[in-house]
Image 1 (cartoon, helix red, strand yellow):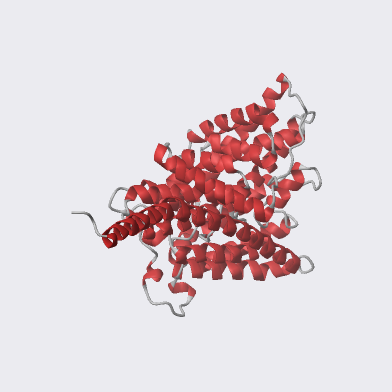
Image 2 (cartoon, one colour; image 1 turned 60 degrees about the horizontal axis):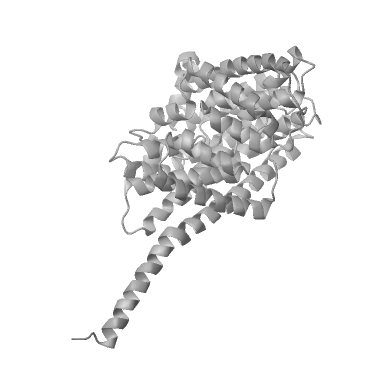
Length: 458
């Protein structure tokens, strides 16, 4: 018996609805989310620059004001993070790694605690408070966390959610976030494979590259085709004599990067007992003390250690503003103090600026060598030592500076630095993920009703 026209129309309607839904889930939703990641990456970058400029404008004629602003805003940021925005602390990359590699069954708990709109708002808002206070924090790691969180939210639209789908979305969002933050699409892909996934899956490949492309297109449309640190000016050919600076840079960066990881991961072994007690039992008082230390370092260095370090590293790379020979060491100390406070904020830009500071020491030994070339080596080497992701490190610096002529030296520096750091410490982000976010519990004050509370009880 032939089908009635109504039944044929109903079958066509169902078929079209099914295909439209499939097209939306496979194309429209990932593209829209990636565009949103790119948009927020550009806005967040602009906001970060604006609030830091406001801080500099405030304290330039009144240096003593730093002793009010930095401690005060540090305390406010820690209070907000621990009370309402737990899960947004730190760079955000350990949270993504923890969610991607969590044992099956823990994923839902981690996703609820470490992602979502609450964490996105805390990541942006509190990190801007930290930069307004002049803390040594970067925005690139938080952008990775934000990108992963935005992509992960799209899982709610899929009729069949699964840990595998969440993993794909997190990796794609992390790649898009890094690409949008640095305007480095290739580095975004490599970072997701080497640092976040620690492997490569064919099914993840398409989603990740699509997210990177559309986030990059948004960044390109809004911010233009810019180089993060500008054009790297190095000699057309590097001779065999450049091998020695490569070796010295790799060793110096590897050791200093390992020292940073140990300082962050094993603070309970080197920090005096009274400070440990303050950090654990009275975090707001610890934040206040840390703010005074950061302000003091900044004033002593005439403002060189405040902020992410992007301006200082760029100026040194282009020879427009020399830095003190102590910049690498003072920036290192300021970053350790800032990161241990527990505010949302990343390590990428500060690490690159520390690498630029180390380059001054290496260049003092090899003064006939191009300063720009040594800076590229040391930025790559120090970042590789901290993350122990050498491929990501040299690809990031290469794309940020258009330094294709330095690829081989940067690769060698990154590999040696990462290997040296690996002798003393595990990869920082991976270690933080295991230490803090597996079997994660929010701080006690985040599990009670918000309300006025004295610092002693925080």
